[in-house]
Amino acid sequence: MQPIIWQALRWPATEYCTLQDHAQGMLANGRINGVYEQQPFSVHYTIEITADWRVSSFHIRQEGIHYTELKLTSDLHGHWFDKDNNHIAAFDHCIDIDISLTPFTNTLPIKRESFEEGESKVLDMLYISLPAFELQKVQQRYTRIGRHEYLYENIVTDFSANIPFDHQGIVQDYPGLFKRIYY
Picture 1 (tube, rainbow, N blue to C red):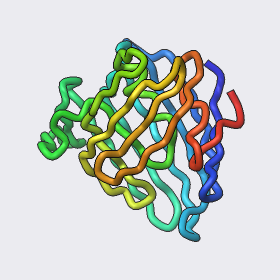
Picture 2: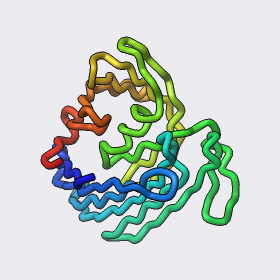
Picture 3: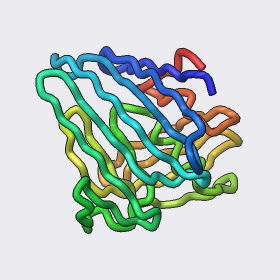
């Protein structure tokens, strides 16, 4: 699959993302470079995805003023484990992840779940807020509102957006936040 490039719209940043076949699924690699709240950053993420679009692990490295790194693995049934294989109960029932600085992770529940037009699903998500590196469990609702369009709602913050996806289920644009500039 050819690279995908998104441009952030609220702060100066660009993401370069690739998807490639890997073992029994796919590997998503992304690098996001930019400036957020007047601080330069470079984030690199790797997400291992099964054939049915479940996240088996993710690794995030952030460089800039500070170097921070995180790697978590999943048993594919909503249980997450740190690098020392300690269970993190706070994230139980989270199948998908949502990394704040990339629209790519909005692709994960759309590819994993099957939605009829008009159907809504509330999902527990492991949310990673970058560049602060804050992790929390949040509930998000996805509603299929068109052939290739979904209403995204963060239930906790009341934030919502109509997100268009391409025919492969990859985020095209994230209104007000990201614009795909190459694919």
